[in-house]
Structure formats: structure tokens, C-alpha cells
Length: 96
Image 1 (cartoon, rainbow, N blue to C red):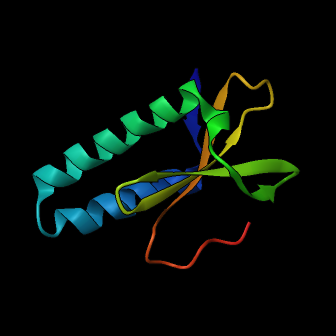
Image 2: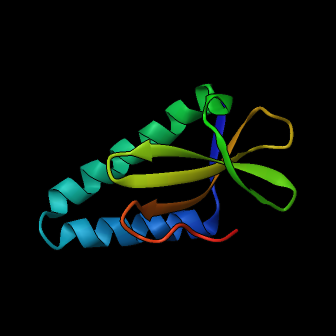
């Protein structure tokens, strides 16, 4: 299954990595790698998570990774997912 990241989600990963790197650069790298691997796992069974919003006529679902919320949509051919946003759970939910 395919897992792609929107530009905004890539920027989110960069910001998360930069924040973690303030305390531990090594952990920042490994955490982002683990989060990306988890996103690949989401793509294996993407419909088991509930719909939390709609964007561009497509359902947005949410998965949790540690304290982070990963928002994604199914690709149009349903052969994978597109990560649209990643946000810390203590922050306000994004508006789509």
C-alpha cells in the first residue's frame, strides 16, 4: 500500500523533529523514522479508524502515534493513504 505525504505534513514532520532535536538530536531522527514507519502501517488497514472531518470531498481519518495525531485520507484509487497533517494532541484540532 502506498503512503504519501502532503507538503504540509512534511513540514509538520520537520517541525516535530526540530522540536525534539532541541533536547536530543539522535532521538529526533529515530522518532521521525518511527512515525514514518507507523504511517506505512496505517496504509495496510486505513479504514479501521473513524472519520473525523472531510476535506476536498474526501473523508479525513485520524490515527494516534504517541502524543501526535496523524490525519489522513484514502487515495482516490483506495490503494493507499495521503497524510494531510500531523499535530501534537495538546494543540487545537486543525480545521479542514
